[in-house]
Amino acid sequence: MQLIRRGDRGPAVAEVRAMLHALGLLAAEGDTYDAATEQAVRAFQQGRGLPADGIVGAETYRVLEEARWSLGDRTLYRQVGHPFVGDDVVALQTWLLDRGFDVGRRDGIFGQRTETALAEFQRNVGLKPDGIFGPQTQRAITQLARAVAGGRHDHMREHEALFRSGPALAGKTVVVDPGHGGGDAGWAAFGLTEAEVAYDIAARFEGRLAAAGAIPFLTRSADGNVTVADRAAFANSAEADLYVSIHADGSPSPRCEGVATYYFGNARAGTSSTGARLADLVQREVVARTDLLDCRTHPQSWELLRLTRMPCVQVDAGYVTHARDAARLGEAEFRDTVAEALLAAVQRLYLPASDDPGTGQLRLPDYIRV
Ligand SMILES: [Zn+2]
Image: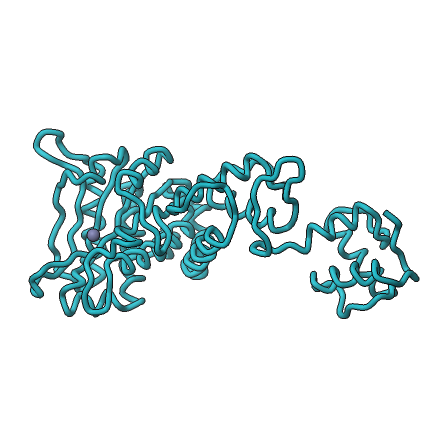
């Protein structure tokens, strides 16, 4: 292509100025390559590791072209021969990398490994694993980003400190499983559905786990559904360290209330001792931090508990069919409290016994001072 440089004017200059303007490097659009345009081009080149000569040649033009894409501007998929290249691909690769999906190099090129990593992410959140970044996948990512930001904001400093103090939770893979979803709402009463409550608590828990250095995976999107067998199969193939399934309970009797936690166990197969310990920790932390009735822990041989190969618990955090429990479950603050309790329980599972603070006492800042 012809070089575009200071003193030029015309449609090619107008296009370059429009791109620089969209990137926030140039105050106004126009069709003259003036001093301000040259300065903006130099700044852009410097930021992208190009020779900062202030002249737009083929290389600078190509990189400008790539930089104008934000994630969500276009549908991305693996195109043989002419791969999608751009800042939107970098953003997608960064997102996947941050969540532990192997995209290889973060090169801004939508290739084979990006496709595979994206398909794996889609499988995790209950989407069709087609490796195509379209509106549905974007929605899932936006929701997760919001959920993580909610937890991350409060805990960023703690996060850094936890890494320095070497908590055993760092790097642990935790599958966070909101029960039900999609066409299956679970129990419903007082304007609440179990599926919605479970997802919201799960998202809050997921954000806190990420902030604490763990690698959390949600088993479904906000409105998706996945079979129990697929949830377990996903956790097994991810070789997760822990599995926490979140439900609420319900009953035809309006008097049933409280929280209970379940782990795998039956007379023939014995019990999962780590599962039982985690169930005990979850139950104790939730009971200590809320006014839910303590319905204790119980061994069960439910499909999910049986099929998952890692310690797995299911907490039923209150009855949506009980007036007071439902009022609690409707509050954002209460959901945060349950998420905090779940985090404390998994954190405590990995704490050396000598560091073990009293139930209901573990806050991340406390732990940092130890
Ligand atoms: Zn349920």
